[in-house]
Image (cartoon, rainbow, N blue to C red):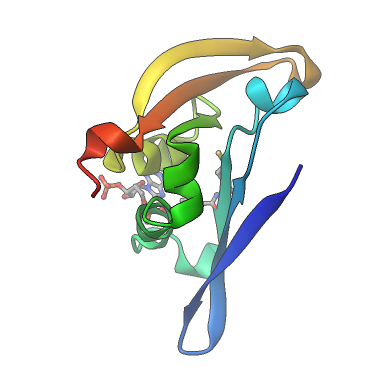
Length: 116
Ligand SMILES: CC(C)(COP(=O)(O)OP(=O)(O)OC[C@H]1O[C@@H](n2cnc3c(N)ncnc32)[C@H](O)[C@@H]1OP(=O)(O)O)[C@@H](O)C(=O)NCCC(=O)NCCS
């Protein structure tokens, strides 16, 4: 699936990565969603993921998609909080056969976040 990848850099060191998938089909509708991210372990719990997602949602491509699906494991506290802090609305907990586990589904509607 085509995607745009952004890197978070602090003092010339890569500390995180976030990617925006341009469209969804197949398993991405159950697990993966539009946005994936990770933060370098030594830079976690400093707000990097929350900031990366906030900045991604300001991009033209994200606004063009308009309604974005984010999924994460129910026990991934940091990721659930990152999504909620950026306006994610929980819709359902979906069982994903591929990983034999559940994923929380959230949607972020950019038009409802008051973006210009
Ligand atoms: C999930 C992940 C990207 C979060 O990155 P991060 O930069 O540490 O996140 P933030 O610092 O923005 O923290 C977001 C919130 O989660 C909390 N948090 C972060 N790590 C936590 C942990 N291990 N346990 C509990 N809470 C945690 C933060 O305190 C913050 O909460 P707050 O808004 O109440 O202050 C990072 O842990 C990671 O890369 N994990 C592995 C990959 C992954 O799970 N990606 C997401 C897949 S859906």
